Length: 261
Image (tube, rainbow, N blue to C red):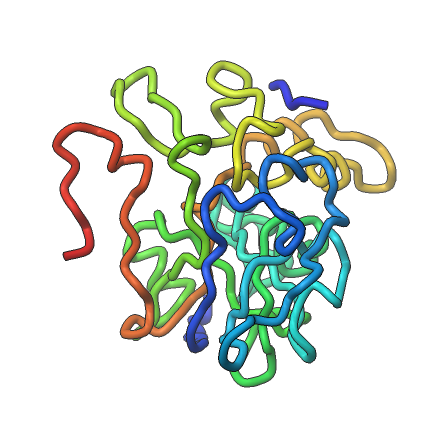
């Protein structure tokens, strides 16, 4: 199937293992070849060298596969997407207004996410019932990152987009950028078209938009609009430990200025 159309808390983790762009093998259960199979989790989750970092690598919360992560780690969504594109109401659950919305793929809806990281929880404070670190969006404005992540922390990505499959040319600017759910159906059919796209076949959006078993078409359309690829997903992380990442889609444009020097 293809788709058509507060209180501030600083969470600090240490280290990461990135999901590589374009990965598509049995060890990760990711990539376009597995886009329709949420249960295809990592079969060899333990890093081959050294001790597991935290986060310890990519996983799919929707798969509900504990074996996908090292022992004592859980699969935590890194997707902060909310209804109508608002800030997630992590610190004031139940609050829905012009500023705060319901997390679609994280917090209580962690199991709906196709994008996550294996995390050893318990070594840091968390406002979430599952103990996971706070998901955030690296493209948020600085003030938004400060509000959700706290002083001394920032939104750090642990995945990278696939520059060959996750980028589109914006029809307004005529420049390359990461694809969005709002590009459905004009610029993309989502599905297997991209490597790091959330909810490739729209199954989780359908569940989210069907409270009580009745599908709400407006909620479904909004959920599709909030879908993203890896550039909009991360965790609140200590600034000094967050690695710099280039905009791999923006880097395809002439005149791109490097972020990391």
